[in-house]
Length: 318
Image 1: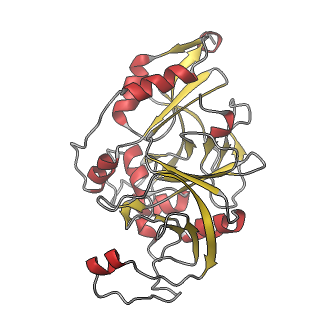
Image 2 (image 1 turned 120 degrees about the vertical axis):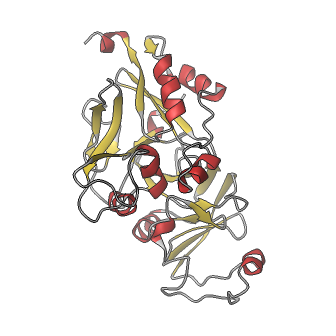
């Protein structure tokens, strides 16, 4: 079962967090997210934003502390580079961690987010860029072994084979793809770092490292210590129960993220899988009424934000 500490939300670096009404103070939300009701009665944990002149999903994503592709997944019918001015779009500002940790960093490749579990019980979540197809970010357990401000970049042999124009070392500065902060992992040549190209955050474009927005990596850098546990996993769905409701969040597959990037409308969608069924059943108390039609819909749509898929009997009767 997903622990209470696993039920968390987006945080914009050191921004003040509000509490979602009706969720017992369990969620810390940036931007005042609440339970939103769609036209079909679906309950979602989201915020919304009204498009202004000059906006793109890319600029909105950066402003709201999100990745580009998660904005695409949440708003599949919105033109990403020229959204209609005045249109209200969904901001997926709440996320459920795919598992809980007492202390450490969880890299969710499935959600393209980094969750930082702190000793005081707070959890912050940040968008990340991950390895491109064929250059996948590793999975498993490791730890932070070194931290460096204004790091030099030493391209690996494989990177220099793909990009022979690169020098053996790129010094710190505006041309350095590591940005201003780097946290080195126990996996050789893999880092959590900033970037000089924020457009790559929330996308599968790295050589395997974990990219963060410059402002986010500087915040995380100050809060983590050498030796902190790090776990990376590909699980793309999360389930949590709180205050009479069961919430399910499902993201695209890694191939699905690629298809979103390519604007391929026929992206692979596994739909309702056995592991989703198992986790929904495990997270639901006996008193919960699971809406399996809603579960199947959320699994198929892969919008990347929590949707209510079950209620306790007394909640449903209100």
